[in-house]
Image (cartoon, rainbow, N blue to C red; front, side):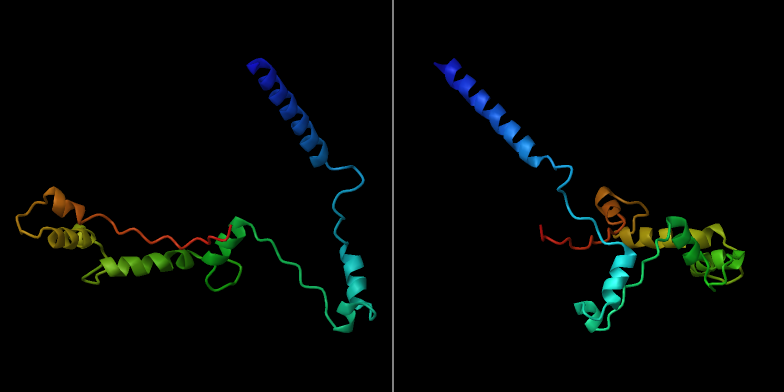
Length: 154
């Protein structure tokens, strides 16, 4: 009895699978309509009898697709002259260097470089023992940035 029921269920599943495959297949001649070409769209907009033409609308400008390297080059080219000079590349680094160069002599000593780490160690060493226990060390963990809220639209 169980063999007959399971056989009937399997046959029904095969028939349903075939039906969905048959219905899901796109026909060669009846798919989605193709988008109008730019010349057809321009003629539609310029036609005074079309709704767009009556409103005096024009075609939207085409978006330029910049590659990843073009975007990176544009960020590095600070004065937008089409050339990246060494000074343009070093400028953001100079600001970070100036923050570390405490005495302003243009040279970075080990003590100046390690000053931030020493400050964080001193803040974490709450009992002023000169060493960190596991609880104190846990306070030196870098702060994580909050992730932006994701849309729950789906």
